[in-house]
Length: 89
Figure (cartoon, rainbow, N blue to C red):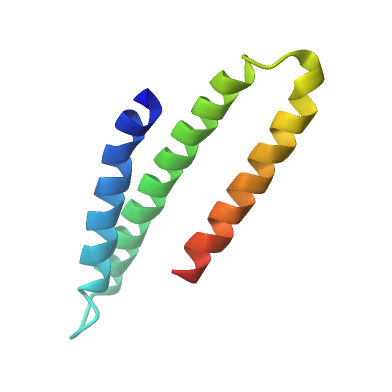
């Protein structure tokens, strides 16, 4: 619960940035503005990835050493699915 409250503002900000980015489609756009907007989105996605990584790293401490391999493989699978889903949007 706390994780979602912590990370939701990151996703909200990213959503606003992406909407603004694609609102630039009509008309001419300066390449520097396009690059700056794209970099802002990449930085926001990076911040999200770091927060999610920290959350899972913290959650991993609840596992016993025997559970590490299963936990790790589940997280890799989940994040792989997340990447595929985001690529289809």
